[in-house]
Image 1 (cartoon, helix red, strand yellow):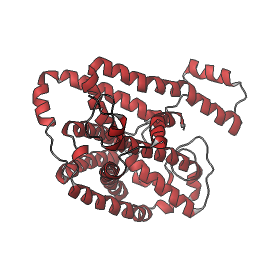
Image 2: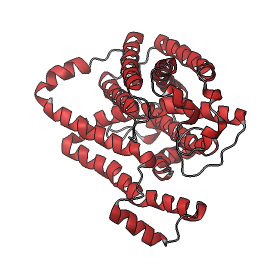
Image 3: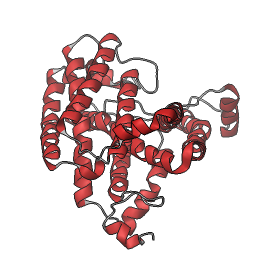
Image 4: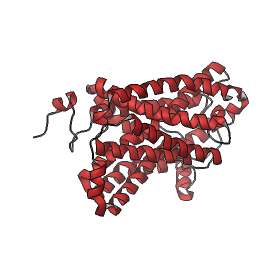
Length: 359
């Protein structure tokens, strides 16, 4: 017998075919809002690529917007991928490989292509025709030429959708390859063991070492939508979400573990502005802020043989992991319910992410 809707909203305990943890949906709303406002902050701040700028030379405004941008950059997509990995594992178990892949293509592939082939050139046309006055052709001519020559097509925020689709396909292939060893793997992965400080620390350390090595040897100017160091980090977070589903980590967070990582997260938040200033963030000439799509004053922290790269990589990983742990516990204990407004926002979060655009 399935629980009624009121029971699900009050006290979710089990994962069923038509049920998702309410507090995870609420976290998804928060993360979506932060993604949109982060991209909005790029319009006025010195950091990040965008299609339209109204930047200022005011140092305080630039500093605040850079802090907001960099903090969200550190943890937002990692959190999204932990939760994505969590739900991907459960969805595959319920649907099987073929139905799972079909549903992923419908939910991720079709919206992604719609953005890539229609919304993206539309935004570029608005930018070039209405704002920059660089083109004079009609919209339909511009769109048809873009599709015909595969020009003026940008992934924008949909890089995440395509990345998640790629991860889902890869996960399916791995599951099929490892099917003969499923019993042994299930025995190891499905032990309901609370997530401890040691496991979190080891995971954070491994991710840190990987991205430090990449960023020290390859400056962060690689011409990929998802930079290599971030891609490796996202793979780790996605895998962590899968393991979390198997071991039921989200439902069994240890209070002491949460406290320790709450302290780590708070300390990291306090340290970052100091590290940013001492690392030369405020010394970047203001004229550098107006050179278009670039990371601006964050550049020293994203690659090269310097202490900023090492310190930022350590800070980024431990802060992002701590923020995820804190959000999980806080929302599970305090925001594990939905009213009509929040439920409507939850149902619309994915659509908002898809149509809020950047180039």
